[in-house]
Length: 542
Image (cartoon, rainbow, N blue to C red; front, side, top):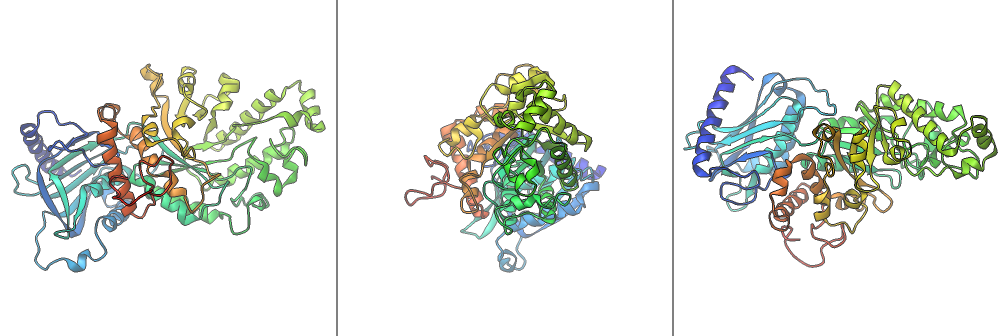
């Protein structure tokens, strides 16, 4: 930050802090100065507010500062959020000579490095005030961040501070001045999207990505392929996508690049998955040799070098598309019985004095080696850890899903862990209420500080057996937002809120915000998720 701007901002914040201390001695992050809930989702780490209402100019200008402030990513994000905050007619309806309290948004970014990796700095600070007020010497709004992606998170929060007043037809910031300091609790805040069980068009995937950015989720776990279909183009093995449902339900290499680039502009990594050796029956539609036999179509043939040549080719092609450092290799629900009943596989096992469990381990470790050679960190579902623990590659990230109590065992062995306990974070479980989603805690059962650091975060999973374009968004939202706050916000602030009053009213508000932004989020309090309302009523109470 330029020295003069840093001093200017520091003076403003010091004055705000002093005024805030006079208003309320120890402001809670989950309440405004008026004692009302803070209608920001997810809840920021530190919040100070006032009692003024500021008007925001529909011609709000971006004032970029610092090496990263002038980046294209920041400029594009500013334009996106301005489009969300202001109605399309706002500029034309602006009275000539009108005066507004907030006329520019200064965005200070200390680094122009646009590398998006696990653990990238997403912290930011916001100050919003009006020049000449009793609590401020700075007019306008300022976002400061160390990285482009911190600035993008700050822009989301700023956009949520902006509220349209239907009486005056102005956009306002209420309870100003605001000073917010924020950063995520966990580095990995994910959403799994399954495009094998039902194909999802690229534009729908982009809608999901947009909605993720609104709640500050930052990893799209793209479960592209499964036993039902293989929709992705793999140039090295072009017959693989013969396993798609149809020629019109496929993703080209260009589609995949487009999705990754779209996500990056919103600070979201894409973690791809191929689930091996099980969940891979669709591969054999293009290359039948991958099946042990016509009667044994999964797991893939562990005895054949061709199997691993194809996996290597897929990974090499996908490495050109997916820059994220983590790659998911699956490894769950591997039923090895038909390896024993297939003569050539049984002979291969006997020659090596291997059981089918040994072969399962051999397959997982060999696939991990292929990924590691491409500079990927392998992620595997928890069955791999449950089956052979310390034998996994030490780089392995274990992905929990079967139930609670797994991450404590994983980190005790020195592995990293991602939590997706199906009892609370599987979105296809339609009878799991939002309160249970909100209660999911990745650090449950882990008291050792060093072991806590091995928990990367968590992920909600949108499995696609019963979800397609017609209902996927309302199955994800608003319940995914409950997990998003758990993963972003500080634990103390989360637990200090009354779930049935403060949190519920804030979640209602966020669900309505999603609806206003064109995201089909279902009512919060449905007995079964994604069902439509059962009676007339306001979005803010359903």
